[in-house]
Image (cartoon, rainbow, N blue to C red; front, side, top):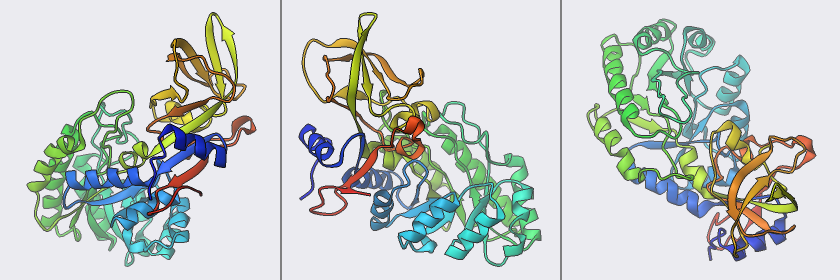
Length: 383
């Protein structure tokens, strides 16, 4: 029988069993997120991007639902290999790679890679008969929280020439890819990129520059933190319309990461101590900005945070992390009941870019990850 691990009594039970700080990963919620996105993007192959939460439980959940994987580093390749994942279900999407990264992925069995400039294309010349390339195109998206086309991607006007270079080296061009950025405010940039890539594919086909049967539309699908976001079916409606205008034989893939992982995890921390400063209670937790709340620095996220203890009155309070660094403050002017050492504080939607980017600065350990609802009857397992 499955449980709801976000219920207060289950949170307390799991902390009692596994300790604090804790990241509770609910595979049932991950399944729900995957299924919602699959309904919103019918016919699109969903490759889970490991980067936000490279955890075995999420990887296996996606695969059991018929999904694929988006690998970007040698470490992620090694994780997939350890889990016995069929390499045919994986693509390697980092546009900049060392030769050892290419060889490691090829040895595993990955055959589809991403490149975005001439130097990177030339790195594949020794492996021309063993690889196909998706050429990443840049579509800047200032409205996204994280603009991923600033660091990666070629200009659209250079994409066909890049395909010509690959073809001249005997390397198959499987198609094009893009990523308009993370936490996109709306789907307009996706639509613009899809339409532009449709034109690029048609031009490259006229030049007979490769197989050209795939378009990778990246990720960026938004989730709710402290502000409302559109329901995913409504968000994707313009994307579905744009994709419907492309040739029917074209394979469409996407790279969701945050959308699947973010809502699937709950962060739990314990009050280590407290102090009243300038009339406000400061509560010092065993997790903070150098730990699971690292996403507030690296990912520009603000997590919904609350105390597990209920009570009145609610007082303006400060939550601070455990380290000796003065920037290690999670939230200020947060309305909380008066807490004591040992009380629990939870952060919601903490599956993406939290544990994955946490450190052990000051020798405070990273949160223990507990995955629940991996299958019927599962009630929790440390992984």
